[in-house]
Length: 71
Image 1 (tube, rainbow, N blue to C red):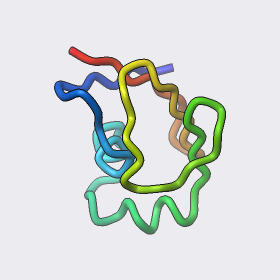
Image 2: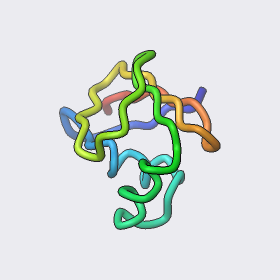
Image 3: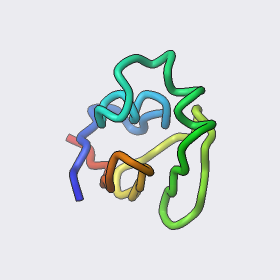
Image 4: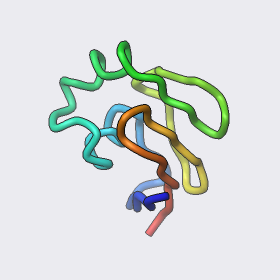
């Protein structure tokens, strides 16, 4: 499980996908979320604006599992 470190209180799921190298541009997030399953803390959620906080666990189909940490 890889750690993704954020500098702010939270990060939106769309931004997270770019930071985690699952997508190359923010504009791809909408389409990526329509075609791939995202599991956040054990619950499926594909809302691009979903806020992720330190301690959240994110599993991205085809990309891997991640933990959000705060610097």
